[in-house]
Amino acid sequence: MKEDSPLELDKLAAGNPLDNIQEFEFVFILHLMFKMLLFKNELSRPLEKKDQDIINAMELLNLAKIRLQKMRESELESMMDEVYSFCGKHDTLIPKMADDYPRLKHKRSEVSYLNHFHVEVFYAVIDLQLQELNNRFDVATSDSLLGMASLNPVDSFPNFEKNRIMKLVGYYKSEFGDNQLRDLSYQLDSFIVYALQRDSNFLNLKAIKDLDIVMAKTKLDQTWSLVYLLVKLTLILPVTTASVERAFSSTKLIKNDLCNNIGEEFLNGCLVCKIEHKLFATISNDAIMDRFQRMKPRRVQL
Image (cartoon, rainbow, N blue to C red):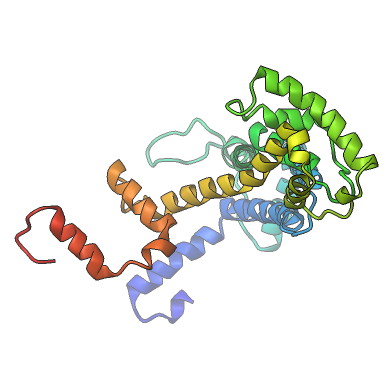
């Protein structure tokens, strides 16, 4: 407690946060963040399951977006009632919502308390969550995931849907021209009939990599070469997307507030060292210093 401190500065430092957490705005934001954390937990737990089906995962994501939109449109009033009730129980001063929201001293604000909490806080937080979901799972990502799920052979291709596969193929324009797209469409029709009715080798497959192995062993990669090419590209896709995610994560770690003005060339060098850290761990410091020493004449021996 601030009264227990013998120093006035410590009392002041403890008093300011205490005053802030007893204000209506802090209580409102606390309730809103609690709802957001519950929402994220509800979405994250099923998505983190290793056996989660991609189709179900995409349905959960769409449901999450609908749930956020519904919250944005109709749940502000109920949340305000919860905040009013909490403030009443804990003797927290409730401002008049029609009054101007204070921004700067000696300057009149043109925004009311109601508008501030409604638009600048409630709407802003929910819109940020929606934007984050849309950024991480945009149309291209959704099409890719659904296309991969359609090629999954587990339980005899339960999610096979040619339209989804063709959408995935559309992102590989360098591999599939117009003629290849037409031929692939015919090959997919023949392949799925053969896989489901004619060949026992396609039974009890566990993943797309098993489909790749079976097609190669049975020489079906030559019969349906375009289908086989698509299967190989599908196997590569998670690796390439993971590499991009790693690069973005590394960029955030390196180009932080303290190093915001870092040059592009130096940033690229730092990213290579960060992403390929296992490779650089095998190189001794002496070898690195010798390399830099020989790059140009230096006054001091490194």
